[in-house]
Image (cartoon, rainbow over all chains, first blue to last red; front, side, top):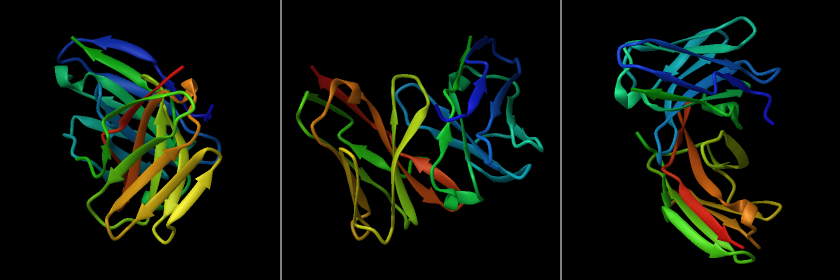
Length: 115
Length: 109
């Protein structure tokens, strides 16, 4: 158990809808990174939040957005869902800024299916 | 984009045998990490090796790093059926960690 919790664990949406995924980071961690993992692939970096500010972004369109709250929990929002958005969305918490944070602590993920 | 590429993509061995998987990456790094993922679940950190280290051990795990070849290997000794999982390397690139495509290891009892 990493202490990182994600919700919901599974959800089904239809094309064009919007979805919000939530992540509670491990106690003492101030950085949250979000990853998208398609079936059979490695996790792809979406973005990272450090102390409530977006700290970096991967190659994802603006319809992927996020928030980090004062307690360092985080949300991932995806608008105008497309079929290719179907994936496991992983949240990882860590302490520190950027890639020098060391070990990432992952939640169990939210599996999104877009029909 | 994928920074690391694991090799082989899939590996099937008998319990008790050793399993070796390799990771190649493209740009200079500060550190490299290995993670394990059971089917469809979250990733679990195994080991971190810094760019100035060449070898690191943790229990039955041995990791090597060759920065001149931009490659790393993960050795699992005396494998067990419970080691069946996907294994990923992750390298730091500026503010983020980039994961490879993974090696799917199956350990047969």
